[in-house]
Amino acid sequence: MPPMLDVSDEVRAEIGDEEADRLLTGESAPGGYDCTSCRTPGDPRQERTSTVLFIGDETAVLAFAHATCLPSQVVKVTEEQLQGAVKSIAGDTADPEPQQAVLGVTSGLVLISGELHPALVVEPTAPIARPGTTTTGDDFLPLLVEQGFLPVPDLSAVPPVLHGWSVLLAMGQLHAVLQPSPSGGRPVAWWQAHHPLQVTDGWRAAAGKHQQVLMFAAPVGSIGRQPREDLLREALDRAAAGGRLVAAALPLAGT
Image 1 (cartoon, one colour):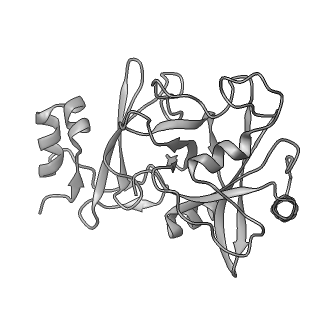
Image 2 (image 1 turned 180 degrees about the vertical axis):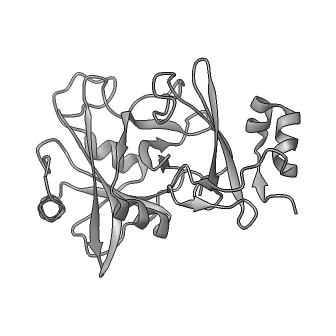
């Protein structure tokens, strides 16, 4: 019985028809694997499995993932970080933040209605001006609201899903927050990790369960770098009560 492997057209184009067919017939398919996304074991003969090709400047690595975690796709990475870092996708897209501003991203579990949800908290290191303007104001939240994020007065309910945006979790690490491409092509990176960010086993398990990540964003000085999840939650509650928090639920990339 052939393995239940998915080989996308873009992966086939990179590895060639011969190798793709060898995978599909089981000749070169793995007997088992650790999912490149959730890092738990998988068996292509028991469950549908995606082929994920990581391509660096000179080399490439073919990995496997549960189809429920990632689709079959090509992921471009730097040669130095072939085992993890996602390469920024070039494109004629206007960043929602100036280049001099750095987005701080913190991961944590947030309890909502008695259930733990994986969350990313984004806070810039400086005020964000609207692109093309010379004002000194902070337009970070208005810019995100224009993208579909919603103000949250409290953390009593899970925010709605923002379709078109997603969170890329691969090889068990956090790589990027993706947004729709203005040209209608593949998503582009809104935030890109310089180095893949480690997340806890609990965070990764919750992301796999919900197949989405809650993203909260607040202006500079609203949250801070909190060392514990209970302190992070308190900071989120304060920001929400002060009208300084927006949020959305972002699907995992490929789901």
